Length: 81
Image 1 (cartoon, rainbow, N blue to C red):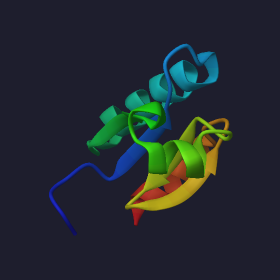
Image 2: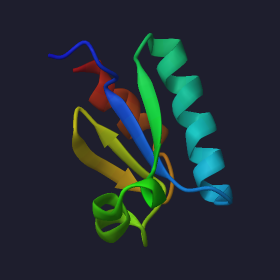
Image 3: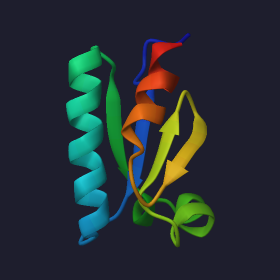
């Protein structure tokens, strides 16, 4: 396992669902001691093309975990592994 963050939130400026997802991920990851980062899809053409119509997208360990909202119990279970 790498030393980098386990959770990535793909987001964009002005997205209220993204703001809510970031807050949820921050709270959950802080409680569990797990690193996370937010990445603006509009800053990278490849990310914008792949995920731009589904933001926020939550990635765990580099794999898509969910989109549009954080499913807290499911995220906690994924991070327990």
